[in-house]
Image 1 (cartoon, one colour):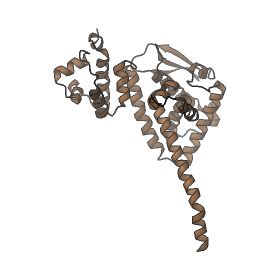
Image 2 (cartoon, rainbow, N blue to C red; image 1 turned 120 degrees about the horizontal axis):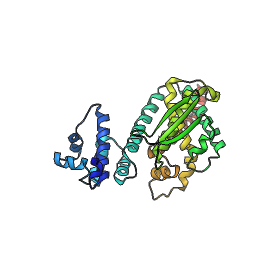
Image 3 (cartoon, rainbow, N blue to C red; image 1 turned 180 degrees about the vertical axis):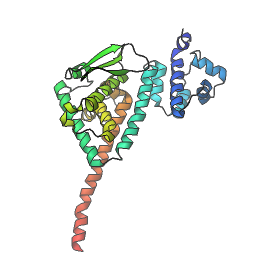
Length: 298
C-alpha cells in the first residue's frame, strides 16, 4: 500500500509530493522531506505525518505560504488539495507556465519583423484549421482536429509521470499516446503540444504556408500553436463577455475552453500587450502631425 493511500488525507500526501518535486526542481538538487516541512515550520514528526497523509494541510495560511515560497499559483495548490488535479497534471501545468514565460522572454530578443511574420503565418494556419473544424464555440474537441491529419493517430494508454508522448510508427506516420482515464485540461494541452511538434518540426515541409523553419523561434511558434488552437484570442475576447462577473474570470474561461488556467493567463496577457502596443502607435500617430508642422515652421 502506498504512503498516499495509507493516510486519512490522501490529498495532503499528494500536496507534499508535489511540493517536494517543485522544490527539487527549484534548487536543482536532491532535497529531503524536512526541507519541504520547514516551509510551514513543521517539526520532523509533523512533516512525516503530512507526507503519509495523516495530517490535513489545507488551511488558507498554509496553502498560500506554500504558493509564495515555491512560486506556485495558489489556485493550483487548491486544485491539488481538492483532488481536482493529480500530481503529474499539476506539475505539468506549473512547468508549462514557467516555460511559456521563458520562451516569450527569449522571443522578444529576436528581430520584431521576423517574430511578427512567424506569428502571422502560424495564426493564419490555425485559423484555417478552425474553419475546417467549424470551431465557433468552445471547447475545441480534439478528435475533430485529428480528422484532418490521417497520418497522426491517438491512443489512450496507461502511462506513468507523463501525460502524452509521440511514437513514430513509420515514415511520416505518428501515434500520439495519452494517459487513459478522465481527460483533464492538462492532458488536452499536452496532446496539442505533441501535435505542434509533429506539424511544425517533423512534417513542416507538408505545410509551406508555415514558411521556413526558424530554430530560434521554434519554441515560441509551438507555444503560439498550443494557445491559439485551444483558446484563440479572438474567441477569448468574445467569451469574456459571457463570464459571470461575480466569479474568477481566469477560472471561468479555463472551464469554458477546457484548458489549464495558465494558458488563459498567457492569452490574456498577450491580448493586453497587443492593446498596449496599439495604444502607443495611436498616440504616436496623433503626435506626429504637430511635430511635423513645428519642423515646417523652423
